[in-house]
Image 1: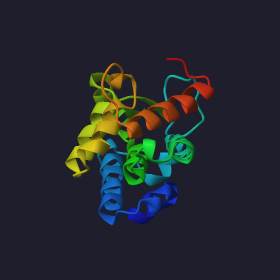
Image 2: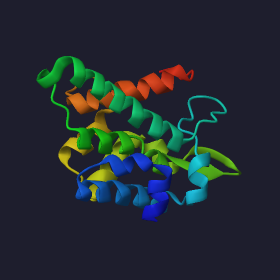
Image 3: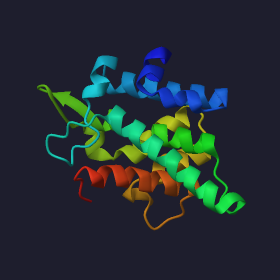
Image 4: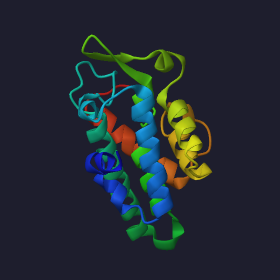
Length: 179
């Protein structure tokens, strides 16, 4: 399973902390198993149900948000030096896991992806945070997953959470998503 996750999300290899890398992988593995998906189906799961007939996969979106987050972090570090402290491993883990809860939020129904029973009860920031917590991820990573979407509006967001929040919405809204 580990090799399949890394194949789909090669950015995982950029996480320097080996324990954190393993936690990210195990969280993805657990979500896929609990959600009842196969690895072949991962690239067919749309990243959102809010864009009709969305052809962008959750995997592609996750990689794009991760890469966007890294670029934002680089620009902030280049221009502001030590005035902005960014933990790159936390940023990477949070970006790679920000939508992992969608694997539980969605289900297959007659060759179509729809909201699951879980997804009707609570959105992916909640299920993703619970999965991350279960797999021993730090409070900082769990916080990032929990606050990356509108559920985090009006509250505290770490600098890493701010970066992923905006990277996510840049990608979502650029493709026609409306909030």
